[in-house]
Length: 96
Image 1: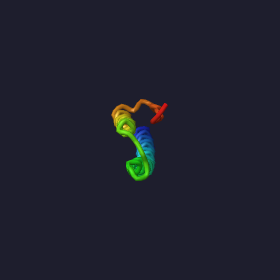
Image 2: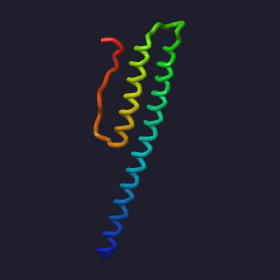
Image 3: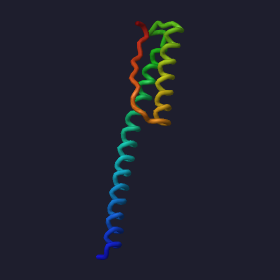
Image 4: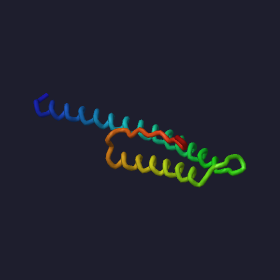
C-alpha cells in the first residue's frame, strides 16, 4: 500500500471513529433528555397540584415565590443551552 493510500485509509478509520462517537453522544443525549424532561414535567404537575385550595392554604406571595423560582430555573436551562459553561446551584426555599 502506498503512503497516500495508507494516510487516506487512516483518515477514513479516524473519521468513522469520530462519527461513531458522535452517534453515541447523540443517543445518550436523547435518552437522558427524554427521561429528565419527562421527570421535570411530572414534578411541575405535582407542584401544580399544590394549587388545590381544598387541601392546602397559601398566599399570593407564596405563589409568586414558587412561580418565580420555576421561571428562574427554566431561564437558567435556556441560558446554559445558549452558552454551556457549567452548573449553577440554587435551592428553593419558600420560607427562611
